[in-house]
Structure formats: structure tokens, C-alpha cells
Image (cartoon, rainbow, N blue to C red; front, side, top):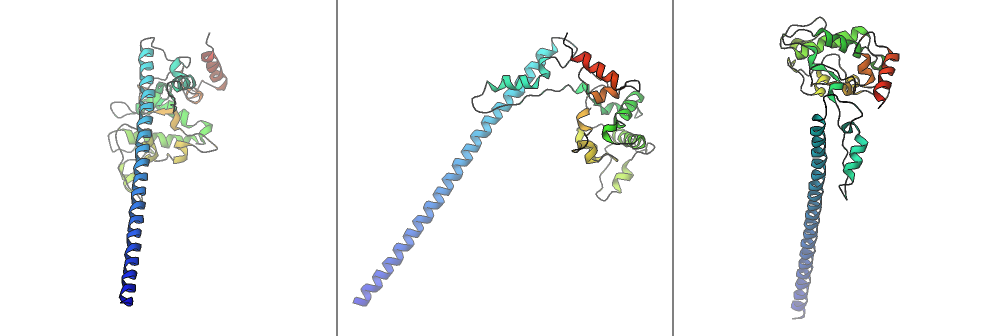
Length: 259
């Protein structure tokens, strides 16, 4: 009888331990699940809040550009749309928790790279000269021959035919690479495509700690006309062989003078 009682007590103790263990496990799982749900809800809330802030900044920029469009045909860096610091500070007062940075850039102040090729797939000589002078700028470290080869390869990337331009590259070159891909034979949609063009390295496109990249000075959009009022000095210098540093400085000083 004593032995049976001891056995019953042992079984009861084991059952108690199992039940307590199960309760602890379920509690931990519940807490983990609740914590995950709380984090997910917080992240969702933050995401919605940030999305609203971003949309507010975008819509404000669109409204500003719409107003600017009706105020004149000439864009300059003295206009409100070009004052990114002022725009960001103005937008900051709208939000108790969160900030938005607003920056508007005039892409007509950049070299509009798709204009290198005309409707017939031939060089646009004006744009070719502009691009050659730009790529030959000492800031990028290319010699004239390297610049010419890149311009030829870029023409072949944009034009619709499969005929190699001088030292350019068409499908036969790109398909023979270790990781082959086709030549686009169409205008650029994004500047990042340039890294696939023969001769354009990642360093040339994006720059390094020692020299700038070409990407910030280019645009896939536009009719080829450069807005000298918003163009970078590097772009202004590339407009003509007759433009030297002294003339560039004079142009910048003139356009910076609000009077």
C-alpha cells in the first residue's frame, strides 16, 4: 500500500512538472507572438507615417513646379525650386515627428545623352563634340582616344543597327563576354545602363574618392539644349573649345549675381 502511494505521488509529480512545463512553453510562445505582432504593428505604423511624409514632400515639389511653370520660361538657380535647404526646412515644420528632404534638379542643365544619335541613327555632330569635350575633362582621367572610343560605343548602344562604329561595340562584342548580354540598340532609359557600355567602368560612372563620376552630369531626357543658367561648370566648359576656365568663372559669377 505504501509502495502504491509512493508511485501515485511520483506520477502526480511528473504530471505536475509536465503541465507546468506546457504552461510555461505556451506562455513563452504567446509572449513571443504578441511581441512580434507589436513590432509588426509598430513597423506598419512607421511605414504608413513615412509614406505620408514622403508623399507630402513629393506633392509639395509638384505644386511648386506647377507654379514655376506659369511664372516664366527661364529656369535659374535663384528660383525657389532650386533652394533645397529652404524647401526642406519649410517642409519640416509640417511634421511633429519625422523630416523630409526635398531637392529639385533641372535636368536641362545636364548633357542629354540620348541626343548623341539622330533619327537616322547617325551622329549628332554637336552632341558628339559636347560629349567628347566633357569626357576629355582632366577631372575624369581619360585620354582623347579613350573618350572617342567610349563615344563610339555609346552611339552603337543607342542606335538601332548592328553596324560597329569605328572603335565602338555591337552585339558581337557583348555576346562574347564572360557574362554575355545583348547590345540594347535603343535610347537609354536609365543612366545606370551606362555601366554596360564598353569602356565605361564603374569608377568612371560613379566616381571615387579621388575623382568625380560622370553620372551626375548626364541625363537620358531632353532635346539636347543645355540650360547654361543651371549647368555645372564642367558642362559649361564642354560647350565649346573656346570656353576656358576664366570664361567659365565669369559665367558662374554673372549668373550668381541676383541683380
